[in-house]
Each structure stands twice: as structure tokens, then as C-alpha cells.
Length: 147
Image (cartoon, rainbow, N blue to C red; front, side, top):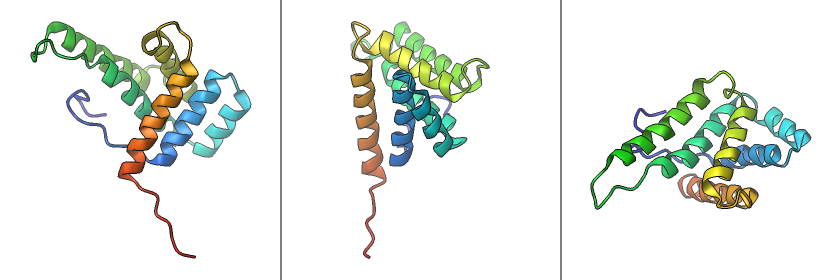
């Protein structure tokens, strides 16, 4: 992770990474252990990195508070520090450092911060996936080969 993810733009993810990460998150959210296990098996050890990439894209924009009248304020720095701390916990925290822990943290963050009534988490996750996929496809377009 870059030291300052608030000012350093995140490189777009690969489209398949976006699809795999969100398939796992959605399966965990739905308590579909079979699908979560199948996605984890297919993605392999890269799943953890993909989930951390998704977490950065979910947490950093939300915690990178807008400045006040064009000037950063103490709340801007506090919110940004909170986002970086949460990512640091996901990267190195013992209890959160596995794929399921990262997925659950993304789901809980979505539920508690990104939804008003703690409902509609699945829809917000789908919107986040669509945004990530759009960015990934713009950067990594699918190349069709002639047969």
C-alpha cells in the first residue's frame, strides 16, 4: 500500500480480480459458505490481496473527508488517518488478516457507514463492484482475438 493513499491514486484492479473479490464478499454476506469456498479455492492466495485492494477502494474515499472551504481541517486528517489505520489492521491484524475477516470488515463498514438504515448492503456492494469493474475495464479492456 502506498504510504499516503489519500493523495496517491490507487491503480485500477484487473477486471477478473474485481469479479472474484466481490463474488467472495457477496457470498460471505449471504452466508453462502459453499460459494465462498469455491471462489477462495479458484482465486487462491491472491484473494487476500484482492480483498485488501477492494477495502482500500471502499475505505479511503469515505474516510478522505472533504476539506472545509478549500482548506484541510483537523477532521480531514483524522478521518484519513482512520481509513489508513483500518487498512493497516486488515493488512497486519491477526484476527482480520484472513480473507473472511477482510470480507466481513468490508461488509460491516458498508453496513454501518455506507447505508443509512443498515439495509441494502447487497445493493451497495453491487454498486461498489460495478464502479470497480468500470474502472478496471477502462484501464484493462478485454481484447478479443480472431479465431
